[in-house]
Amino acid sequence: MSLPSTLDLTGRDVWIFDMDDTLYPPEQGLLTLVQARINAFMVAAVGLPEDQARTLQRQFLDEHGTTLAGLMANYTVDPDRFLHEVHDVPMDSVEPNPVLAKMIAALPGRKYVMTNGAREYAGRVIERLGFTPLFDGVWAIEDMELTPKPAPATFRRFLDQFDIDPARAVFFEDTPRNLQPAKALGMATVLIGDGRGHPVGDWIDAQADDLPAFLEPLDLKDAA
Image (tube, rainbow, N blue to C red; front, side, top):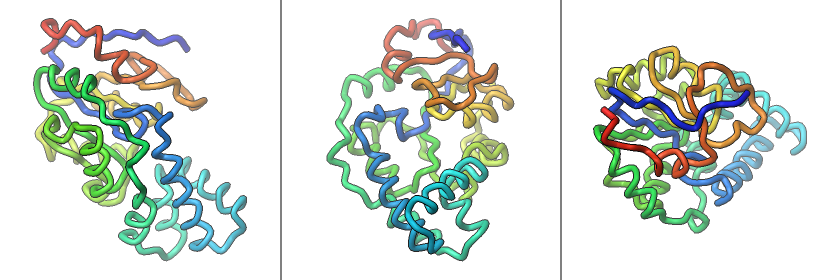
């Protein structure tokens, strides 16, 4: 499915960003480090060989949105321990991005991060990127009451928490299915990356290889 690379931003002045593989490129490898820790946690939690535990983890992602949600539905786990252990990774591979920081700062209106990652981890990533002063709020998995994207109720709670009119919002995300509830609520939706083989449908308004590729050509005087 071919998607446009531009979007009519008239009346849009709330900017919502997924974090991992959206605010920074997947080539920086941070999620690879997280995934290795998830794999180790899965093996210990479910008592299966590594290859079987990895297959089950993919099933949890497909069915529940996150590994943690799948574990909690099927096993007895300590969610706080899981969140700490799997996100306790070094930030060395994440490169500060002052150019993208200027692009985000130039967007008119409010800016938020909505991530299925843990709150402390999100804070470290955003600080490492140099983006901390840019955002009006960060909504992490703890704020979602451990019910991750793409659960529609999570999106509705997010909008209520920050008093956001979805008709004024643009949502940026690298996972296609997480854009579906955003579109259903009235947000404009932008897929960052190619979707990695996941289904792409008419709930996605535009697509860009990375976030700077979408933001750089914006004529911001026409936004909001």
